[in-house]
Image (cartoon, rainbow, N blue to C red; front, top):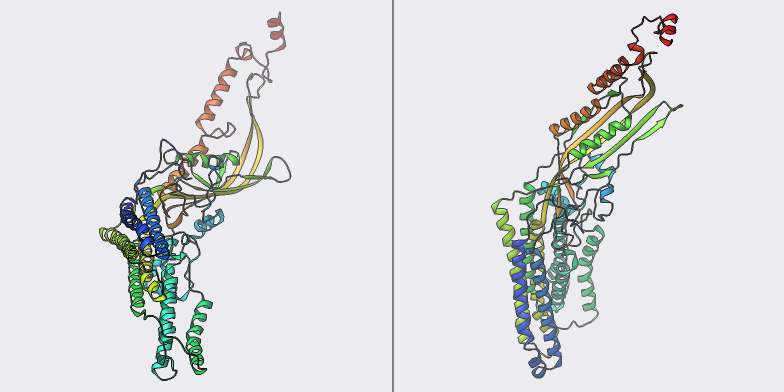
Amino acid sequence: MSYYYGSDSVEIKNPFKKEGIIYISIGVFEFLMGLLALFSVRSRMLSGGTLSGWISLGICLILLGTGVGYISSGIYKVLRFYVGRGIPASLSKNVSKSEAHVNEPGVLYNSKNLEQMLMGRKNPTFVEPTSFIDQLVYSIFPKFIFLPFAMRNYISILLTKTAYSLVWVGVYVLAVLSGSLGLTKLTKTSFSNWMCIGLALVLLIIWSNHKTSLKVIPKLKIESLSKGNFIFFIVLAVMLPVAGELLINKGVKIPAAPLNPFMFIVLDFVLIAASITVGLILAKMRSDMLNPLTEVSEYRNHWQENVHPKDIFRSFDMEMSNMRFKEMPNRIYRELNPQLNMEGSMDKGSFTGDTIVETQPIYDEIQYSDMFKNIRFYISVYGGVLVALSSLLLFLLNRNISNVLSLSYVFKSLYVPIILWAFGSISINIAHLYWSEINFKSYLIHFQGEGTYSESKISTGMAYTDSTRSENQIVRTSFTPWLILSQIKTSTLAGSGVQNLEGTRYVLDMRKDDYILENLVKGIRTFLDDQQTIANSMSNRDMESIKNIYSVNQVSPANNLGAPKNSVGMPPREEQEKLGG
C-alpha cells in the first residue's frame, strides 16, 4: 500500500470531497427506491404471480446493490485522504535499500528510458496516435497528445464507440435507401423494422460494456478502432440488405416487428453527442493548460584530482542527500556502483560509473480556472441525474410489472433505464478523470563519470633527526563528470481508499534549472577540495598536518643536543663520547 507513516509527509488535499457528495446523493436515492420497491415484493407475488414477483425482487436487488455501491464509494471519497511517505509511485523500479519492501507494479519507465529522456532531450510519454479517428481528432486539437494516458484513452474509446455506432447506422440507412429507390423489396416488409430493433440492441451493447470503466484506461496503449473490425462492418452493411432481399425472393415471410424503436435510437444519439461533447470540452480545457518542454541543465568538465575515484562518486551521494525533501529518501533508479578496472598492474587503471536519481516528488496543485471547476462539477451532476432517472424508471416499472413477458414489453420497459445508466456512468467517469489528476514536481538527475587513475607513494619527515614521519599512498585521478538535471512535472490519477496514490505516474514536462545544478556542482567541488591528501599540500587541512609533524620533530632529543652536527646530521665522534660518558 502507498501509506507509510512518517512524522513528515507530503500534504495533499482530498480532491474527491465534492464528487463524494454527488456519489452519496445518487446512492441514497437509489437505496430509497430499492427499499420502497422491496415492500411491494410480497404483494406482487400474491397478486401478480411468481414471475412478476421474481422480476420485482430482481429490480429491488439491483437498486439496493447499486445504491450501496454508490454510498460506499462516496463515503470513501469524503473520508480522510491518507498520504504517507511512500507516495507517489516511482517512475521506474526504485532500487534504494530503504524502499526494497515497496511493491510498485504500475511503473511505466525503466532506467534506460529515463537516461534517454535526459540525454536525448525528449519525452517518450507522448505517443503518436495511430488510428485514423485519433489522428483526425488530434489534428483538430493538437494538444490532446500531451494529456495523461487515461484521459487520452477515454476520449479514444468514446470516439471509437461513436464510429462503430455510425457504421451500424450506415447499415440501417443503406437498407432503407435501397428499398426506397426500388433496388430491393425490403421496404414492403418489416425487415427494416427488425433491422431498427437490431440497431438499437447493438447500440445498447456498444455503450454498456466494460470498456467504458476506469479500470481499463490507465495504460500506455491507446485504444483505437481496428481496421479489420471497420472493414468487417462495412462488408456487413452491404451484405445484410442483400441477404434480406434473397430471403424475400425465395418466399420467406418476415413476421411483423413488435415495435419500431426509432425514438430509442434518437435518444441514443442525443446521449452520444452529449457524452462526446462533455468529454471533448474537458479534454480541450485541460490540454490548453499544458505547454510541455524538454529542457535539461547540463554540466561537463575535466577534473584532475588527488583523490580516489570512488570519493568523487561518494561526494555526489552526499550532495544528493542534502537535496532531500523533509528527510524523505530520494528515488534511486540506477544504483551508483563505480567499476574500477586494473590495467596491467595494481597501481593504475580506469573506472566508470553512473546513477539516476529522482528527489522526493512534491505536490504541485493544478491551477484550474473557475469555469473548468464549474463544468467538471456540472458534468458529475449531469451523470448523477441520468443514473437517478434510470433508478426512478426501474422503480416505476416495478409497480406495474406484467406477468406475461413479450419482446415489446421487455424492450420498452428496460431499454431506456439501461441506456440512461450507461451514459450516466460514462459522464461520471469523464468528470472523475479530472477530479483525480494530481501533479508533482521533482528533480531527475543523471550523473555519470569515467576516467583513469594512478597510485604512488610519498613520504614526509624522512630526515635522520625526524622522529615522526608520514607515508602516504596518493591516487592521481583524471575524471570527466557529466551531470544532467531537469525539473520534471509528473501526473498521476489518484484513487480513494487504500492504494490511493499508487497509480502510474507520467512525465508531462521537463525544465532546466541551472541554479540547482550550479549548487550541486559547487557542493561536490567543496567536498573534494577538503579531501586532498597531505602529499599535495594544497588544502588547509594538509598544511596543518605538516605543521604538526614539524613541531614534533623540533622537540625531538636530537634537535635539543645543542652540539654541532656533521654533514649527515650527527654530532662529531668526540662529542658523542663525552655525552655518552
